[in-house]
Every structure is written in C-alpha cells, then in structure tokens.
Image 1 (cartoon, rainbow, N blue to C red):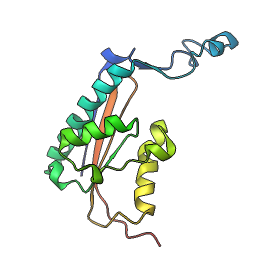
Image 2: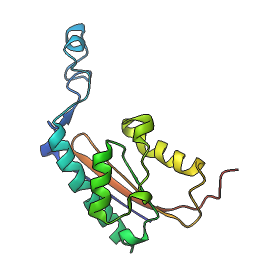
Image 3: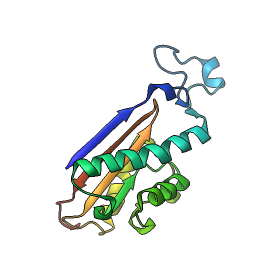
Image 4: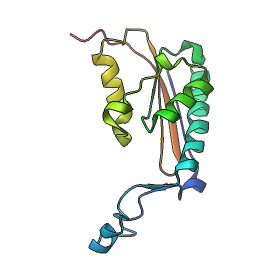
Length: 156
C-alpha cells in the first residue's frame, strides 16, 4: 500500500545515546556516568510522538487512498501507554483497535512493532484483508508509517 518516512534533526538532542559510538567510545568512566544508556527529555519526546505519529499515519493513509476509518489495527511503537492512547484519540481510532502489549513486555525499542504484530497474529485476531497501520518514531528525531493489507491466513 504506502509508506511515509521523515526526520527532523533539530530534535537530535531530545532522544540520544551519548556514548558508545566512534565519536565518544565506551570507557569505564563513561559507563559509570551512564552515557551509554538512552537519555531523553521525556516531555519533548511525548509532544513529538503525539504529533508525529498521527501526521505520518494520515499521510500514509492518504497516499493509500484510505482514512483512519479503514484501519483495522493500529500497530504503533510501544513507547508508553499514554502515547498510544493520545495517538488513538487524535486519529479517531477506537482503543480496542490499537495493539498494545507494553504492560507485558515494556518498551522493546525497535523490536516493539514486530513483536506487537506477532502477538496480534498469534492471538488469531488478524484476518486476510485487514488494513494495518504500522507506525513508529525514534531518535534523531525520526518517524515512519507503513499501511499494509494483511494477506496471510490464520495461525495453524
């Protein structure tokens, strides 16, 4: 169907891992300071996520000739439940149609969308023809949405 990807480098300092790369190699001192862990300005990440996720989803849906009413399942990055609820409300998607398993596994970073999709599939809730909005955001700041129509049959 369609994808939408984007980035805004002005938010590079909002969600980072300062050390561990070639610019600031990992040392015992940097590990002791916690510089190899994700650091974020939580309120800014929240504001960004609840703005960027609906916008990228709507652009990808429009390019697919669809609207949020056509989405069977919203499968977002599992950052936190507050973000998921706010995004669903802004898109006008019922919370029952938002895949959320964050309470079971926490924020698994870049694996959260594939894991949520796996849970949705193995639970038997996916049907051929379902329209999925797979949407995420991350460091940089970056965002993306993919609108796909599910074709695989039920779990055997």
